[in-house]
Amino acid sequence: MRAVGRTGGYRVPVAKGSGLGVRSFLLLGLIVVVVLAATGVWNPFPGMWDWVNRRQPISQPDVVWQQRIGGTPRSVTIAGETVVVEQRTRVEARSLAAGAQLWERKADWTAVAGADADAVVVVGRLLVKGYEVLDPTTGVTRRRDDDAVAVWTYRNLLLDARCVEATDCTLSAWEPRGAAPLWTAFLPGVSSGLLADNPNLLGTRRLTAARIHDEVASPENVAPLLGFPVDGRVHVVDTATGRVLQNVEPDRDERLTVVGGRLLRIAARSQDGNCYFAISGRDPISGQETWQRAGLNLRTADSAGCVQRENPYGARNVLVGVSPDGREAVLDGYDGRLLLVTENSERVLAVDDRYAVVRTADRGTVSTRELGSGRARWNRPTGEKAGAALTPYATIVADEKPNRLVALDPRTGRELAMLRTSANALAVGPAGMVIGEGREIGYVRFGAAAGDAPRGGDPPRDGGGPAPGPARGGAPQPQDSCGPKNEVCPAPEYGK
Image (tube, rainbow, N blue to C red; front, side):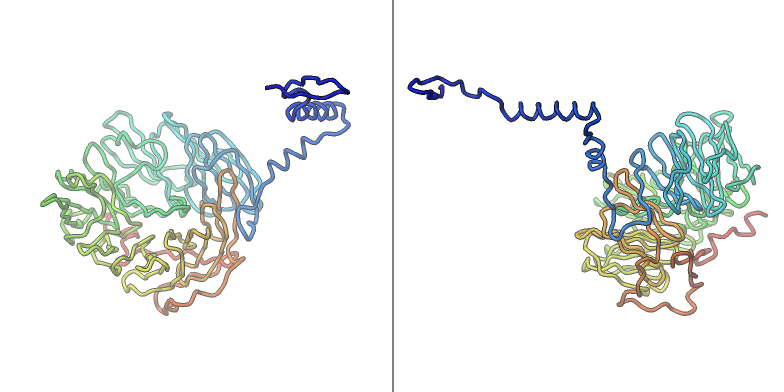
Protein backbone atom coordinates (compact mmCIF):
# COMPACT_ATOMS: atom_id res chain seq x y z
CA MET A 1 0.00 0.00 0.00
CA ARG A 2 1.40 3.41 -0.96
CA ALA A 3 1.21 6.65 0.98
CA VAL A 4 0.01 9.78 -0.83
CA GLY A 5 1.50 13.29 -0.40
CA ARG A 6 0.05 16.65 -1.40
CA THR A 7 1.88 19.44 -3.33
CA GLY A 8 -0.26 22.37 -4.27
CA GLY A 9 -3.39 20.94 -5.83
CA TYR A 10 -1.80 17.73 -6.99
CA ARG A 11 -1.54 14.41 -5.18
CA VAL A 12 1.99 13.03 -5.45
CA PRO A 13 2.58 9.33 -4.60
CA VAL A 14 5.44 8.76 -2.10
CA ALA A 15 7.14 5.34 -1.78
CA LYS A 16 7.13 3.95 1.78
CA GLY A 17 10.61 4.04 3.43
CA SER A 18 12.08 6.62 1.09
CA GLY A 19 14.53 9.22 2.39
CA LEU A 20 17.36 8.86 4.94
CA GLY A 21 16.65 6.31 7.64
CA VAL A 22 18.28 5.79 11.07
CA ARG A 23 20.88 3.42 9.67
CA SER A 24 21.86 5.91 7.01
CA PHE A 25 22.38 8.66 9.60
CA LEU A 26 24.49 6.31 11.75
CA LEU A 27 26.63 5.33 8.76
CA LEU A 28 27.06 8.99 7.81
CA GLY A 29 28.05 9.86 11.38
CA LEU A 30 30.60 7.03 11.49
CA ILE A 31 32.14 8.23 8.21
CA VAL A 32 32.46 11.75 9.65
CA VAL A 33 34.13 10.45 12.83
CA VAL A 34 36.59 8.35 10.82
CA VAL A 35 37.48 11.32 8.61
CA LEU A 36 38.03 13.56 11.67
CA ALA A 37 40.19 10.90 13.35
CA ALA A 38 42.24 10.35 10.17
CA THR A 39 42.92 14.07 9.77
CA GLY A 40 43.85 14.49 13.44
CA VAL A 41 41.02 16.91 14.18
CA TRP A 42 39.33 14.66 16.78
CA ASN A 43 39.88 11.01 17.76
CA PRO A 44 37.42 9.53 20.27
CA PHE A 45 38.59 5.89 19.90
CA PRO A 46 41.34 5.77 22.60
CA GLY A 47 38.95 7.17 25.19
CA MET A 48 36.22 4.76 24.14
CA TRP A 49 38.61 1.79 24.41
CA ASP A 50 39.78 2.93 27.85
CA TRP A 51 36.15 3.08 28.96
CA VAL A 52 35.40 -0.44 27.65
CA ASN A 53 38.63 -1.86 29.11
CA ARG A 54 38.35 -0.09 32.46
CA ARG A 55 39.11 -2.39 35.39
CA GLN A 56 36.54 -2.54 38.11
CA PRO A 57 37.76 -3.37 41.63
CA ILE A 58 37.21 -7.08 42.29
CA SER A 59 36.45 -6.57 45.97
CA GLN A 60 35.34 -4.10 48.59
CA PRO A 61 37.42 -2.93 50.34
CA ASP A 62 39.84 -2.66 47.45
CA VAL A 63 42.85 -4.96 47.15
CA VAL A 64 46.45 -3.80 47.61
CA TRP A 65 47.00 -4.29 43.87
CA GLN A 66 45.03 -5.67 40.95
CA GLN A 67 46.41 -6.87 37.62
CA ARG A 68 44.99 -8.37 34.45
CA ILE A 69 46.88 -11.43 33.21
CA GLY A 70 46.97 -13.02 29.77
CA GLY A 71 44.51 -15.83 30.49
CA THR A 72 42.45 -17.46 33.20
CA PRO A 73 44.90 -18.90 35.77
CA ARG A 74 45.06 -22.65 36.35
CA SER A 75 46.83 -22.17 39.67
CA VAL A 76 48.35 -19.37 41.73
CA THR A 77 51.02 -19.82 44.41
CA ILE A 78 52.72 -17.36 46.74
CA ALA A 79 56.44 -18.18 46.58
CA GLY A 80 58.48 -15.97 48.89
CA GLU A 81 58.10 -12.39 47.65
CA THR A 82 56.52 -13.40 44.34
CA VAL A 83 53.18 -14.63 43.03
CA VAL A 84 53.54 -17.49 40.53
CA VAL A 85 50.65 -17.69 38.05
CA GLU A 86 50.22 -20.85 35.98
CA GLN A 87 48.22 -20.52 32.76
CA ARG A 88 47.43 -23.04 30.05
CA THR A 89 50.68 -22.73 28.10
CA ARG A 90 52.61 -20.09 30.08
CA VAL A 91 53.82 -19.24 33.54
CA GLU A 92 54.58 -15.82 34.94
CA ALA A 93 55.79 -14.36 38.23
CA ARG A 94 54.65 -11.07 39.74
CA SER A 95 55.88 -9.00 42.62
CA LEU A 96 53.97 -9.72 45.81
CA ALA A 97 54.40 -6.10 46.88
CA ALA A 98 53.09 -4.34 43.75
CA GLY A 99 51.85 -6.95 41.28
CA ALA A 100 54.29 -5.94 38.54
CA GLN A 101 55.33 -8.73 36.19
CA LEU A 102 58.86 -9.99 36.89
CA TRP A 103 59.19 -12.61 34.14
CA GLU A 104 57.20 -14.88 31.83
CA ARG A 105 57.95 -18.00 29.83
CA LYS A 106 56.28 -20.88 27.99
CA ALA A 107 55.42 -23.99 30.02
CA ASP A 108 52.74 -26.69 29.84
CA TRP A 109 52.84 -27.39 33.58
CA THR A 110 54.08 -25.51 36.61
CA ALA A 111 54.56 -26.33 40.29
CA VAL A 112 56.21 -24.66 43.28
CA ALA A 113 58.53 -26.37 45.75
CA GLY A 114 60.05 -24.96 48.92
CA ALA A 115 58.85 -21.97 50.90
CA ASP A 116 59.79 -18.38 51.66
CA ALA A 117 63.37 -17.62 50.55
CA ASP A 118 63.95 -21.26 49.51
CA ALA A 119 61.01 -21.45 47.10
CA VAL A 120 61.58 -22.49 43.47
CA VAL A 121 59.37 -22.81 40.39
CA VAL A 122 59.40 -26.13 38.52
CA VAL A 123 58.27 -26.12 34.87
CA GLY A 124 58.08 -28.62 32.01
CA ARG A 125 56.43 -29.58 28.73
CA LEU A 126 53.77 -32.24 28.24
CA LEU A 127 54.94 -35.51 26.68
CA VAL A 128 58.55 -34.29 26.94
CA LYS A 129 60.92 -35.72 29.53
CA GLY A 130 62.68 -33.45 31.98
CA TYR A 131 62.01 -30.24 33.84
CA GLU A 132 63.66 -26.99 34.89
CA VAL A 133 63.98 -25.45 38.35
CA LEU A 134 63.64 -21.65 38.19
CA ASP A 135 64.32 -18.83 40.61
CA PRO A 136 60.89 -17.30 41.39
CA THR A 137 62.19 -13.72 41.40
CA THR A 138 64.33 -13.70 38.25
CA GLY A 139 63.11 -16.73 36.27
CA VAL A 140 66.74 -17.86 35.86
CA THR A 141 67.23 -21.63 35.54
CA ARG A 142 68.93 -23.03 38.65
CA ARG A 143 68.90 -26.69 37.62
CA ARG A 144 67.85 -28.63 34.54
CA ASP A 145 66.88 -32.29 34.18
CA ASP A 146 66.42 -34.05 30.84
CA ASP A 147 65.21 -37.51 31.90
CA ALA A 148 62.49 -37.30 34.57
CA VAL A 149 58.94 -38.34 33.65
CA ALA A 150 57.21 -37.12 36.82
CA VAL A 151 57.81 -34.55 39.57
CA TRP A 152 56.25 -34.08 43.03
CA THR A 153 56.73 -30.79 44.83
CA TYR A 154 56.53 -30.13 48.58
CA ARG A 155 57.40 -27.40 51.03
CA ASN A 156 60.59 -29.18 52.09
CA LEU A 157 61.34 -31.61 49.27
CA LEU A 158 61.22 -32.23 45.52
CA LEU A 159 60.86 -35.77 44.16
CA ASP A 160 61.33 -36.93 40.58
CA ALA A 161 61.10 -40.26 38.80
CA ARG A 162 63.07 -41.38 35.75
CA CYS A 163 62.97 -44.69 33.88
CA VAL A 164 65.70 -46.37 31.83
CA GLU A 165 63.18 -49.00 30.80
CA ALA A 166 59.51 -49.61 31.56
CA THR A 167 60.44 -51.83 34.53
CA ASP A 168 63.59 -50.00 35.63
CA CYS A 169 62.89 -46.66 37.33
CA THR A 170 64.48 -44.62 40.10
CA LEU A 171 62.92 -42.13 42.48
CA SER A 172 65.17 -39.28 43.65
CA ALA A 173 64.71 -36.71 46.43
CA TRP A 174 66.14 -33.18 46.26
CA GLU A 175 66.16 -30.19 48.50
CA PRO A 176 64.20 -27.50 46.60
CA ARG A 177 67.41 -25.58 45.85
CA GLY A 178 69.73 -28.56 46.05
CA ALA A 179 72.27 -29.46 43.37
CA ALA A 180 72.61 -33.17 44.23
CA PRO A 181 69.96 -35.75 45.22
CA LEU A 182 69.56 -36.61 48.90
CA TRP A 183 68.76 -40.24 48.07
CA THR A 184 67.59 -42.48 45.24
CA ALA A 185 65.34 -45.52 45.38
CA PHE A 186 64.53 -48.26 42.86
CA LEU A 187 60.97 -48.70 41.61
CA PRO A 188 60.02 -51.47 39.16
CA GLY A 189 58.27 -49.07 36.81
CA VAL A 190 55.84 -46.23 37.31
CA SER A 191 52.14 -45.94 36.61
CA SER A 192 51.21 -44.75 33.13
CA GLY A 193 49.42 -41.88 34.86
CA LEU A 194 52.60 -40.63 36.55
CA LEU A 195 53.40 -37.82 34.16
CA ALA A 196 54.14 -34.11 34.56
CA ASP A 197 53.70 -32.48 37.96
CA ASN A 198 52.23 -34.02 41.12
CA PRO A 199 50.45 -37.07 39.66
CA ASN A 200 48.16 -38.80 42.13
CA LEU A 201 49.64 -41.10 44.74
CA LEU A 202 47.83 -43.39 47.17
CA GLY A 203 47.10 -40.93 49.96
CA THR A 204 44.17 -38.67 50.74
CA ARG A 205 42.19 -36.22 48.63
CA ARG A 206 41.17 -32.86 50.02
CA LEU A 207 37.66 -31.68 50.70
CA THR A 208 36.82 -28.96 48.20
CA ALA A 209 34.65 -25.85 48.27
CA ALA A 210 33.16 -23.53 45.68
CA ARG A 211 35.19 -20.34 45.08
CA ILE A 212 38.22 -21.73 46.93
CA HIS A 213 40.96 -23.20 44.74
CA ASP A 214 41.91 -26.81 45.51
CA GLU A 215 45.58 -25.83 45.92
CA VAL A 216 44.99 -22.67 47.94
CA ALA A 217 47.35 -23.92 50.69
CA SER A 218 50.07 -25.57 48.59
CA PRO A 219 52.78 -26.64 48.89
CA GLU A 220 52.77 -28.66 52.12
CA ASN A 221 55.46 -30.68 53.87
CA VAL A 222 56.05 -34.13 52.45
CA ALA A 223 54.45 -36.98 54.37
CA PRO A 224 56.79 -39.42 56.15
CA LEU A 225 55.58 -42.23 53.87
CA LEU A 226 54.28 -42.13 50.31
CA GLY A 227 52.42 -44.84 48.41
CA PHE A 228 53.37 -45.30 44.74
CA PRO A 229 51.06 -47.41 42.55
CA VAL A 230 52.98 -49.70 40.20
CA ASP A 231 51.28 -52.44 38.14
CA GLY A 232 48.50 -53.03 40.66
CA ARG A 233 50.86 -53.07 43.65
CA VAL A 234 51.70 -50.40 46.20
CA HIS A 235 55.30 -49.47 46.98
CA VAL A 236 55.62 -47.65 50.32
CA VAL A 237 58.62 -45.30 50.36
CA ASP A 238 60.14 -43.66 53.44
CA THR A 239 60.72 -40.05 52.36
CA ALA A 240 63.48 -39.50 54.96
CA THR A 241 65.79 -42.24 53.69
CA GLY A 242 64.40 -43.46 50.36
CA ARG A 243 63.98 -46.96 51.72
CA VAL A 244 61.14 -48.99 50.14
CA LEU A 245 59.41 -50.41 53.20
CA GLN A 246 56.57 -52.38 51.61
CA ASN A 247 55.61 -53.86 48.25
CA VAL A 248 52.01 -54.97 48.66
CA GLU A 249 49.26 -56.20 46.36
CA PRO A 250 45.69 -55.43 47.52
CA ASP A 251 43.03 -58.09 47.73
CA ARG A 252 40.16 -57.98 45.26
CA ASP A 253 37.83 -56.04 47.58
CA GLU A 254 40.54 -53.80 49.06
CA ARG A 255 42.00 -50.39 48.42
CA LEU A 256 45.39 -49.51 49.87
CA THR A 257 46.37 -46.02 50.95
CA VAL A 258 49.21 -44.51 52.97
CA VAL A 259 48.19 -42.00 55.64
CA GLY A 260 49.77 -40.81 58.88
CA GLY A 261 52.76 -43.13 58.70
CA ARG A 262 50.61 -46.25 58.22
CA LEU A 263 49.63 -48.48 55.34
CA LEU A 264 45.83 -48.69 55.45
CA ARG A 265 43.83 -51.60 54.05
CA ILE A 266 40.27 -50.50 53.27
CA ALA A 267 37.92 -53.41 52.54
CA ALA A 268 34.46 -52.87 51.00
CA ARG A 269 32.05 -55.82 50.87
CA SER A 270 28.68 -55.78 49.08
CA GLN A 271 25.80 -57.46 50.86
CA ASP A 272 22.00 -56.94 50.86
CA GLY A 273 22.36 -53.94 48.54
CA ASN A 274 24.73 -52.15 50.92
CA CYS A 275 28.48 -51.66 51.25
CA TYR A 276 30.12 -52.80 54.46
CA PHE A 277 33.55 -51.35 55.27
CA ALA A 278 36.46 -52.44 57.42
CA ILE A 279 39.74 -50.53 57.88
CA SER A 280 43.04 -51.72 59.34
CA GLY A 281 46.32 -49.91 59.89
CA ARG A 282 49.62 -51.71 59.28
CA ASP A 283 53.11 -50.99 60.54
CA PRO A 284 55.16 -49.82 57.52
CA ILE A 285 58.19 -51.94 58.44
CA SER A 286 56.87 -55.20 59.87
CA GLY A 287 53.52 -55.22 58.07
CA GLN A 288 51.79 -56.18 61.33
CA GLU A 289 48.29 -54.86 62.01
CA THR A 290 48.30 -52.07 64.59
CA TRP A 291 44.59 -51.16 64.64
CA GLN A 292 41.29 -51.93 62.98
CA ARG A 293 37.88 -50.32 62.75
CA ALA A 294 34.66 -51.49 61.09
CA GLY A 295 31.69 -49.59 59.73
CA LEU A 296 33.30 -46.27 58.79
CA ASN A 297 32.65 -45.33 55.15
CA LEU A 298 35.64 -43.36 53.79
CA ARG A 299 33.82 -42.62 50.52
CA THR A 300 36.27 -44.66 48.46
CA ALA A 301 33.58 -46.74 46.72
CA ASP A 302 30.91 -45.85 44.20
CA SER A 303 27.36 -47.15 44.38
CA ALA A 304 27.88 -49.96 41.87
CA GLY A 305 29.20 -53.11 43.49
CA CYS A 306 31.25 -51.28 46.14
CA VAL A 307 34.21 -50.96 43.76
CA GLN A 308 36.76 -48.60 45.35
CA ARG A 309 38.17 -46.18 42.80
CA GLU A 310 38.95 -43.11 44.91
CA ASN A 311 41.35 -42.14 47.67
CA PRO A 312 39.67 -41.33 51.00
CA TYR A 313 39.00 -37.73 51.96
CA GLY A 314 41.37 -36.22 54.50
CA ALA A 315 44.59 -34.26 54.97
CA ARG A 316 48.02 -34.94 56.42
CA ASN A 317 47.52 -37.73 59.00
CA VAL A 318 43.70 -37.74 59.28
CA LEU A 319 40.79 -39.13 57.26
CA VAL A 320 37.14 -38.10 57.02
CA GLY A 321 34.37 -40.67 56.81
CA VAL A 322 30.74 -41.42 57.65
CA SER A 323 29.79 -43.56 60.63
CA PRO A 324 26.99 -46.20 60.40
CA ASP A 325 24.49 -43.76 61.98
CA GLY A 326 25.18 -41.14 59.28
CA ARG A 327 27.35 -38.80 61.35
CA GLU A 328 30.65 -37.61 59.91
CA ALA A 329 33.85 -38.56 61.71
CA VAL A 330 37.54 -37.67 61.60
CA LEU A 331 39.90 -40.62 62.04
CA ASP A 332 43.57 -40.66 63.07
CA GLY A 333 45.42 -42.63 60.40
CA TYR A 334 48.23 -43.58 62.80
CA ASP A 335 46.33 -45.30 65.61
CA GLY A 336 42.71 -45.43 64.40
CA ARG A 337 41.32 -43.10 67.08
CA LEU A 338 38.16 -41.16 66.37
CA LEU A 339 39.34 -37.57 66.79
CA LEU A 340 35.91 -36.04 66.13
CA VAL A 341 32.35 -37.27 65.63
CA THR A 342 29.89 -34.60 64.53
CA GLU A 343 26.28 -34.24 65.60
CA ASN A 344 23.46 -35.33 63.30
CA SER A 345 23.23 -33.27 60.08
CA GLU A 346 26.54 -31.51 60.74
CA ARG A 347 29.07 -31.59 57.91
CA VAL A 348 32.86 -31.40 57.89
CA LEU A 349 33.90 -28.70 55.39
CA ALA A 350 37.69 -28.74 55.90
CA VAL A 351 40.24 -30.55 58.03
CA ASP A 352 43.93 -30.71 58.85
CA ASP A 353 45.81 -32.44 61.69
CA ARG A 354 44.76 -29.78 64.24
CA TYR A 355 41.21 -28.66 63.50
CA ALA A 356 38.05 -29.43 61.57
CA VAL A 357 35.74 -26.74 60.19
CA VAL A 358 32.16 -27.95 60.62
CA ARG A 359 28.89 -26.55 59.28
CA THR A 360 26.31 -26.87 62.03
CA ALA A 361 22.98 -28.66 61.68
CA ASP A 362 21.02 -25.43 61.23
CA ARG A 363 23.28 -24.61 58.24
CA GLY A 364 23.67 -21.06 59.55
CA THR A 365 27.04 -21.33 61.33
CA VAL A 366 30.52 -22.68 60.73
CA SER A 367 32.45 -23.87 63.75
CA THR A 368 36.09 -24.84 64.16
CA ARG A 369 36.52 -27.93 66.36
CA GLU A 370 39.72 -29.02 68.02
CA LEU A 371 40.61 -32.57 67.02
CA GLY A 372 40.93 -34.93 69.95
CA SER A 373 38.84 -32.90 72.41
CA GLY A 374 36.06 -31.86 70.02
CA ARG A 375 35.84 -28.45 71.68
CA ALA A 376 34.66 -25.49 69.59
CA ARG A 377 37.45 -22.96 69.16
CA TRP A 378 35.13 -20.39 67.54
CA ASN A 379 31.81 -20.05 65.72
CA ARG A 380 30.84 -17.71 62.90
CA PRO A 381 27.40 -17.07 61.33
CA THR A 382 27.30 -17.84 57.59
CA GLY A 383 24.91 -18.66 54.80
CA GLU A 384 23.74 -22.23 54.27
CA LYS A 385 25.98 -22.72 51.21
CA ALA A 386 29.21 -21.49 52.78
CA GLY A 387 32.41 -23.40 52.02
CA ALA A 388 35.73 -23.39 53.86
CA ALA A 389 39.39 -24.34 53.60
CA LEU A 390 42.13 -24.70 56.22
CA THR A 391 45.62 -23.42 55.42
CA PRO A 392 48.65 -23.01 57.70
CA TYR A 393 48.09 -19.25 57.84
CA ALA A 394 44.33 -18.73 57.68
CA THR A 395 40.94 -20.39 57.57
CA ILE A 396 39.12 -19.21 54.44
CA VAL A 397 35.32 -19.04 54.41
CA ALA A 398 33.49 -18.40 51.12
CA ASP A 399 29.89 -17.28 51.55
CA GLU A 400 27.04 -16.57 49.10
CA LYS A 401 24.05 -14.22 49.03
CA PRO A 402 25.74 -11.90 49.75
CA ASN A 403 29.08 -13.01 48.32
CA ARG A 404 31.91 -12.80 50.83
CA LEU A 405 35.47 -14.08 51.26
CA VAL A 406 36.66 -14.09 54.87
CA ALA A 407 40.11 -14.98 56.22
CA LEU A 408 40.25 -15.96 59.90
CA ASP A 409 42.93 -16.95 62.37
CA PRO A 410 42.59 -20.78 62.49
CA ARG A 411 43.14 -20.88 66.26
CA THR A 412 41.11 -17.95 67.55
CA GLY A 413 38.73 -16.99 64.73
CA ARG A 414 40.12 -13.45 64.68
CA GLU A 415 39.14 -11.74 61.42
CA LEU A 416 42.18 -11.15 59.20
CA ALA A 417 40.31 -9.93 56.13
CA MET A 418 36.66 -9.60 55.09
CA LEU A 419 35.90 -8.92 51.43
CA ARG A 420 32.64 -8.24 49.62
CA THR A 421 33.45 -10.04 46.39
CA SER A 422 32.41 -12.76 43.98
CA ALA A 423 36.07 -13.57 43.27
CA ASN A 424 37.76 -16.86 44.16
CA ALA A 425 40.41 -17.45 46.82
CA LEU A 426 43.45 -18.63 44.82
CA ALA A 427 46.41 -18.68 47.22
CA VAL A 428 47.15 -17.97 50.87
CA GLY A 429 50.52 -16.87 52.21
CA PRO A 430 52.01 -15.68 55.53
CA ALA A 431 50.76 -12.09 55.20
CA GLY A 432 47.83 -12.19 52.80
CA MET A 433 46.00 -13.96 50.01
CA VAL A 434 45.52 -13.72 46.26
CA ILE A 435 41.98 -13.58 44.91
CA GLY A 436 40.87 -13.68 41.29
CA GLU A 437 37.93 -13.41 38.93
CA GLY A 438 38.39 -14.26 35.28
CA ARG A 439 41.69 -12.70 34.16
CA GLU A 440 41.84 -10.28 37.09
CA ILE A 441 43.88 -11.15 40.17
CA GLY A 442 44.58 -9.07 43.25
CA TYR A 443 46.44 -9.27 46.54
CA VAL A 444 44.80 -8.76 49.93
CA ARG A 445 46.99 -8.04 52.93
CA PHE A 446 45.93 -9.61 56.23
CA GLY A 447 45.25 -7.31 59.15
CA ALA A 448 43.70 -4.49 57.16
CA ALA A 449 40.28 -5.40 58.49
CA ALA A 450 41.22 -7.43 61.53
CA GLY A 451 38.77 -7.46 64.40
CA ASP A 452 38.08 -9.27 67.63
CA ALA A 453 37.38 -12.97 67.68
CA PRO A 454 33.71 -13.74 67.03
CA ARG A 455 31.60 -14.39 70.06
CA GLY A 456 30.17 -17.83 70.69
CA GLY A 457 33.33 -19.95 70.59
CA ASP A 458 35.54 -21.05 73.40
CA PRO A 459 38.49 -18.81 74.23
CA PRO A 460 41.98 -20.08 73.39
CA ARG A 461 42.96 -22.81 75.80
CA ASP A 462 46.25 -22.51 77.63
CA GLY A 463 48.53 -25.45 77.15
CA GLY A 464 46.85 -26.48 73.92
CA GLY A 465 50.02 -26.30 71.84
CA PRO A 466 52.29 -23.50 70.69
CA ALA A 467 50.38 -20.34 69.92
CA PRO A 468 50.99 -18.84 66.50
CA GLY A 469 52.97 -15.63 66.76
CA PRO A 470 52.32 -12.45 64.83
CA ALA A 471 53.57 -12.05 61.29
CA ARG A 472 53.60 -9.22 58.80
CA GLY A 473 50.20 -7.64 58.41
CA GLY A 474 48.88 -9.22 61.60
CA ALA A 475 48.64 -12.75 60.18
CA PRO A 476 49.35 -15.77 62.39
CA GLN A 477 52.43 -17.90 61.91
CA PRO A 478 51.82 -21.48 60.75
CA GLN A 479 51.64 -24.00 63.54
CA ASP A 480 53.86 -26.96 62.75
CA SER A 481 52.77 -30.36 64.02
CA CYS A 482 54.17 -33.85 64.04
CA GLY A 483 50.69 -35.24 64.60
CA PRO A 484 49.18 -36.75 67.75
CA LYS A 485 51.76 -39.58 67.75
CA ASN A 486 54.66 -37.69 66.13
CA GLU A 487 53.93 -39.72 63.01
CA VAL A 488 54.53 -36.86 60.58
CA CYS A 489 58.14 -36.46 61.74
CA PRO A 490 60.68 -39.00 60.49
CA ALA A 491 60.96 -41.97 62.82
CA PRO A 492 64.55 -42.90 63.79
CA GLU A 493 63.99 -46.62 63.23
CA TYR A 494 63.08 -46.09 59.57
CA GLY A 495 66.67 -45.33 58.75
CA LYS A 496 68.18 -48.29 60.59
